[in-house]
Structure formats: structure tokens, C-alpha cells
Image (tube, rainbow, N blue to C red; front, side, top):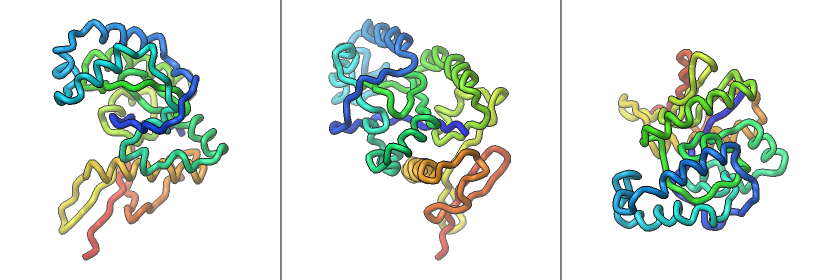
Length: 234
């Protein structure tokens, strides 16, 4: 079972540096060089930034070659990564993590958890990033012999996986209250991290081994859609 995960826009300033590189560094470098040609005045609209982030993101790219690399699963600091809690893993679990989990990313393409990444800001809302990466990502998973791919990422990322080539299973967490059921973004992010931690802790090897229940959410399967549903018991 191959697992895909999503990056976040928040970073851990205390993360460990590393000399490890990503697998598509040449492609990443070409993207960065192209971004460096964009006028600073256009960064706000190009990256959909607030005014106070323009200088930061501009510096990310114009100092890219000089910036340190940080261990990816230690560096990302969004809700899913906080729930996963990378720093509590022992060496055996880190080996499993690095061998089975891949972050799909608009700048780096495919990131292994122990790869080194530099600070950046980019997502797949930029159409050109999808065209750059889609074939490379699918060819990479084919070369790894992947068959079952479990997506613990949003559709923005899982949409890049060619369903004609892989068994793609997409996981969502749904909260129900007073007969109204919906996906709540922050809970989805937290529970994706929690489920990934369970998978790593239990050394699971296939989709059928996913837990029936986790943190009050009950598994419901509809084809290759896996929904974990929590119902209001009051």
C-alpha cells in the first residue's frame, strides 16, 4: 500500500536540517528559476498572498539556493502533521514512514518524509504546476510498482493520480450533528494525520487493514471511497 499525503503552508522553525535532497530536484530548480523572473509586484496575485506575506515569499525564491533544507515531516506544521507527531516516532517507524508515504507537492513533485525541503509557497491552483508534474508523479509510482494508493490528501492532490493505472482509495472524515452531515476541513486534516499515525504504528500493508473505528469515527466503504463518519449521539 502506497500512501499519499499533502503538504502544508506552515513550517516548524525548530525543524532539523538535513542534506537529503528531493527526487526531482532538477525540475524544482527549473520552476524556481522561472518564478524568480516574476516581478515582485505580481507575487500577491500569482501566489494568492496577503500583503504581509509578499516579502516573505519573494525572499523564499530569491534566496532559494542559499536556504537550508529541513526534514519534510519535521518541517511541515499544519494540523495533519501536528496530529501525526513525527518527533515521537522511533527509527523503525521512521523507516516504514519513509518507505511507504509520499507527499504530493506543486514545487517538489513527490517528497519522501525524510527528504530535505526548503521554505517555499506554492500549490496546485497554479495550472502550469499540474501540467509539469502529473505525468512525472504517475510514472514515479508506476516505477515503484505501486498498485493500491491510499489518499490521505484532499482532491487537489489525489486528482493527479491516474485512476486507470492505480487502485486509488480516497479517505474522508464526516461529522454528523442533528442529521446534518458534512466534511469539516480542520477535522479532516487532523484525522488524516491521526489515521496515518495509526497506519505507521500498526505497520499496515493494505487498505483492508484500515481500522473499523478511530477516534469515534466509523468506517463506511463505497467502492474506493472510504468515509469515516462520526454521528452525534445526543
